[in-house]
Image (cartoon, rainbow, N blue to C red; front, side, top):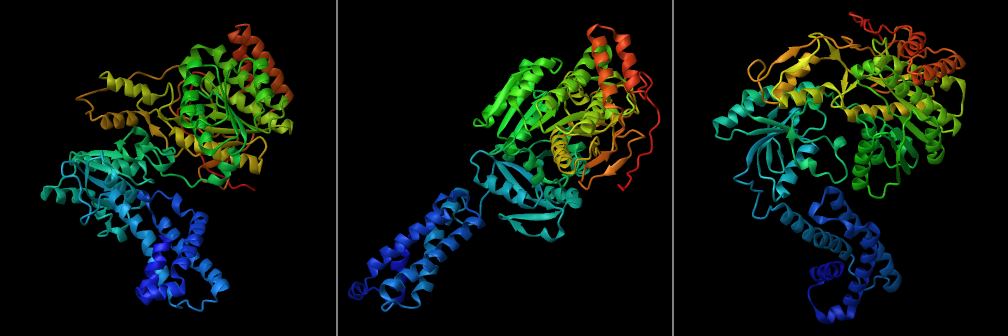
Length: 620
């Protein structure tokens, strides 16, 4: 292209005169220019771009390549010929011609790829008419992808936006019809023109649960479907789910707008380090593994005592990132000797302890198993870290540890106490505790239960009309765990607990009603809700802070700090030794007596019926 551009520029400047060209050595000079341009293109990576997906960044690279070619060529030619026979206007003409020759074929290829020959893009005439919510970069990408697709058959009727300045503009030839608040009016107008959308597709990345609920109201009123393109944070490399809008899920409706996270700190926490995750096959553990792998650790060790769960997450990661260095280890955290061997061999820079028994009624009916796993298991992990001088351990805790009304909550509180005491006692290993509420869709939680009950025709069972819980999506919970861990490693508030801001609690009966609605069913007609009564150890509400650990701001959105309230490390260690002895001897009464000593605020079977007032205090 450079050779042809030089010849063309010369012809435009001096005409086609063979004798003149020969006298001036035009062909030789053009060849020299082409050689220099080839080196420049190699340097700028011009030929590495996939031009079917050309962007403004690629166009800038064309301009940069053309400019560098001219700027490098002129000094070289001056050194050889002193530019005695070289027209002074030729570099300017040559630059324009070279840009045209480089960009023209690429633009044609892009147009061919987008099927835009013959004027503006023509949508499929037999596709599904849709309305797109979001006229930003996500909307532009979605429309462009639909245009390129050979299989996706949509007729895009227009955009709606939250940005008034976008109304009336065209994006990839599709008009922005109005604002979000006017969605119902826009659909009515389209209907009167015989262009009613069959589906509303939300492509905007940052959209709150309240906004989605409003869109759902409009969709139901106009008998349209409502779907969402997954936000970028939930997509993996080359994930084609971006082109496949999915139905609105309960996670979407209960979700909150994306928080502003320090992703650089999260990357520094993980990238290039050796990481170990216990409970790697569980709901939180597996999501931790996914997000850790996405950042890029040097090595990742997956530890779990469940063969199937461990196999499942191992296979998923190996199919996704075949080159990821990884160990898959069957081990029970209750086995101290095995755990010390694993930690000493793997030598992680950072260990996430997510292994636990979390189902309240099951732990209530299997007290000793819950204590051995949640208390003794956490102690074993902590002691293995100290013995191997592992720099940092992160304990994944729960809001049920605050004023517990059940053994599960008390067991997690004891794990917190031990890790806090160890963090204050020694300096070989730093202990970070992260506390949060319920995770939507986790194993044994209410969402999978409601989904099963919906599939079998109901009724949906709710234990109390006033029972409420804090909820967070698995993805959001793990992001904040990583953020809190990064914060804990930099600030080092010894013995403190990082508490994730869970937003507002949700009534379980409202959750049930919303899931019935999302399933396209009508409460009282298609399906019922049955009140069954509180289960053993179940509280009407959960708390995130104890009265003696007032919340402090951390400076990071979504994360608060609980002041430590701990006892003597030696006393706690002795109590845990006695607790293990009682549990392994099957002495439930003796074990519970020790639990009552360690967690005097536990009121097993007597959940409080009123909420405490919570306020955030300023750090001194």
